Length: 471
Ligand code: BYC
Image (cartoon, rainbow, N blue to C red):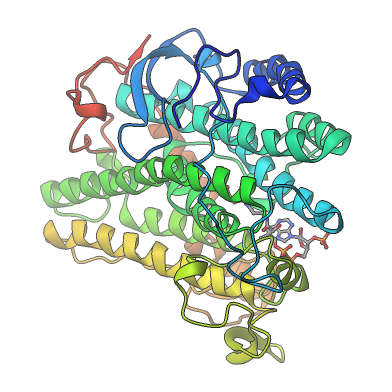
């Protein structure tokens, strides 16, 4: 499964054997680069960045490191190898051979899933495009661009599927993916969280921890698809996604470590006068990013999700490892529900309709594991403080709790109470302004901004003072 870098579009799908597809993708390529130049990293596109590029899709050593200017990155098409005799693992077609082509009756829902997935990738690059002006170190700057180029590659992955399997409609969707813009009121990105701003580096770490993790769970569900090309491309995307979540988890952990150091040094929780990010503010950022990411899983009860599952288009996380009938027509699932105006209860609902909620539960458990690791940083440094994930009813815009005012611990309150307290739970204007005031670039190799601890180790065994970006 080596990747052919002699080709204009690097790939491991024998693109040169399919002239029609190759022409379609080669026609899209310059439009993608134009989009990158227009909507990608601001100010830094002429700088060389120490990036990894995929050279093969097998588990060992798929990455090669070297200096590249981001517009010259070799975006390409990489699918995991075909699994011999792979069978459909769930839904009405369970046990049958997976599909190499899209069944006519499922063209529209599949296209919709692929477009929704594809839309998030360029959206995140757009959200992060100004962060290159204020990175806390060259190490972080490099990680930002690594995340960005890989999100760009994830867009390629979905565009390949659209061009290869959806004819003219697919080509039109591929164009539209470059036309929508994050946060643009006239042509917004499809999902809510991808129209929010990522205005500072704390938001970036939170986004890569919480929102990229939605990516992990959605991609893992699509990697179970009966449509084999989608499954194989999502499997490979997951290996890239892991690094993005690493950037988020270690980024927040480094902010916490620095906060602890300052708290111990000055014997106070109020470390803003010393240029740190206090833990109370961190909690507000957790509340915000976790709640908007919960929305990305859709409604608790969803016929869309039930249909995707029954049709075999989108499974559950780790579908093949689950010990149930994988059909779910007679199963139930506990769903947190609003009863009357202000009571929250857990009710048993039809499992098929609750597929989104089940995926959200897997996601919440995974988020909690990282929060526990963050809390260990505080414990190890003798600081008595624990970050917590807010209740799932808190600050929601989609589903059962959409626009229901609720506290972070899950008590339904009045609008007036919400208004009176929301600045205690979500970053206020003053919090944003303070975090923004810290965003001063630190671009000397080996130096780190005062609000974040250095990482434990460098990228690809390079030292911490390596010139990760040549400015
Ligand atoms: N915002 O039945 P429902 C990633 C719409 S992140 C706006 O509840 P469904 C990444 C919905 O479209 C992973 N609208 O939801 C991370 C529907 O509209 P219609 C991205 C929303 O369809 C970081 C209506 O509400 N991948 O990769 O079961 C950086 C009722 O929908 C939202 C995917 O999402 C929302 N949050 O599930 C870079 C996977 N939620 O039918 C990348 C593909 C729902 O009334 N997408 N609606 O017009 C899906 O599987 C599904 O579309 C969703 C929604 C899970 C998102």
